[in-house]
Image (cartoon, rainbow, N blue to C red; front, side, top):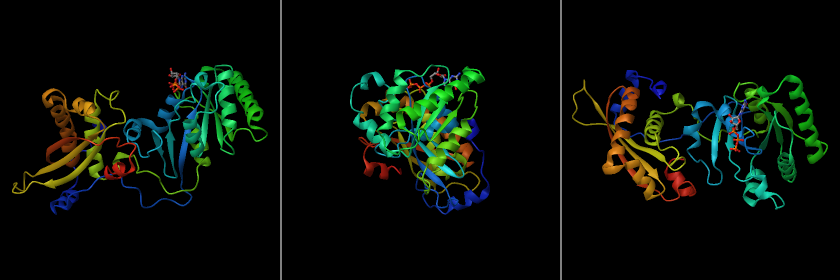
Length: 340
Ligand SMILES: Nc1nc2c(ncn2[C@@H]2O[C@H](COP(=O)(O)OP(=O)(O)OP(=O)(O)O)[C@@H](O)[C@H]2O)c(=O)[nH]1
């Protein structure tokens, strides 16, 4: 966290705030992007333990926790967004397909089918160190039903085998592609080691190539490029999730309502009033955030305030309110209101 605190800011920013304009939040979409910019959705499938999550984290980097926790769509759970100068790759979850046993013999689960039919490309993860098995075959035949969807076969955990075994697995995976998908086979076959950072960039490149030319779909997750209010919101969000991430992984939205200088303060000792709403979906979640007698929320405030003061270079009065916005992740209107 400390690395995000960029320290006191230059005077220019302070001057702007003196005008007293409340800063409205957040998540502004970029207004400019280079020609040929690509953006789209992709989903990793593969049997349990194939390395999907590890690869997701390697692709997205450190910022996955923050970015993924903001559902930007009502239909998919976003696991992370890869932000690049030339592209944005949105990684979405496909619940279900990684549990072939429950699906075996069934029609492709509707939700999975829907999700997969909506993404622009699919990354099918197959471990380098395990023989292709019925689970992989099952998934491949299910994927074959998605017509003309580019499917990239990703041979994961490449660090666990030697070169000749890796080559053999690549050939076997290639064969599985033509066997199940027909002559065209996979859009590409690529080996990767997410833990050793081998070919992670190549996986990103290949997936990006499958994305349509499109403006950016989501605000840039790079904190340093974001407006201050968004950074303030992120600091609060991190503090609020500290220790309860498992209980509230996707259910917390932080909206900075305003940042205004307190009136009547001496010029050499200004104070900013930062008013913030934390939105959760249920009263039980509200109770978690607030804690017994409000103790936890006070801690959250104290922790976040330190970061915000360092960021804005001035003293801050942080006014936190916890509110319930029922099903905000699923309701487009609420999402809009929350700035997504
Ligand atoms: N050596 C090595 N291990 C890896 C690599 N990628 C993942 N693993 C390990 O493989 C195991 C499974 O990885 P996950 O990323 O959790 O797999 P998953 O496909 O998301 O698993 P499910 O959530 O069960 O579907 C973990 O113990 C990882 O540490 C890799 O590139 N190299």
